[in-house]
Amino acid sequence: MDRFLYLAGLLVVLWLPCTANAEAVVPKINGVIQQQLEAFRKNDFKTAYGFAHSGIKGQFALPDFERMVRRGFPQMLRPGAVEFGEIRNEGGNAAVQATLTGEDGSRSAYLYLLEMEGGEWRITGVVPLETGPSESLV
Image (tube, rainbow, N blue to C red; front, side, top):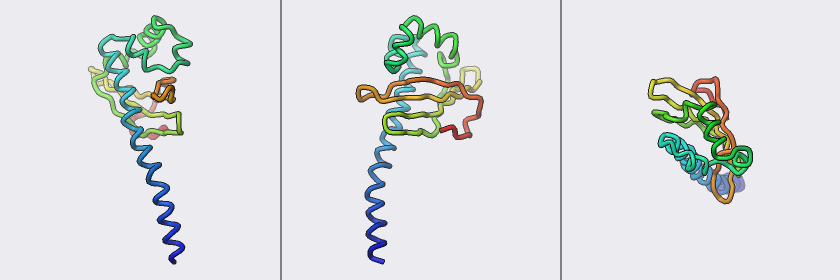
């Protein structure tokens, strides 16, 4: 019995830092997305572009990035509210569902993909989703 309690205690001690670390990442990841959306609201594409991963920047110069967002993701330009779903964090890569509610009440769900780069979370991609916010996607 003592051996079981020792092993159970050891597992809890080893598991807690992982949980705390995972929970500490949530506001950082959501914050990057929020900050980019806030930059879009202000029509500040230069700041919004700063939250993109270097891989995105390699594919799109700033004017092309702006054009891509305006044409492909117009709902992101003026969302009224943002709801975040569960985050799946795999070390230096993460995925999170975000549901945007427009000023007109329309809702759009996206899967944001992020990667650590230079010690900061950067957005590597955004995928439009056809599902409602209650469905787990990550």
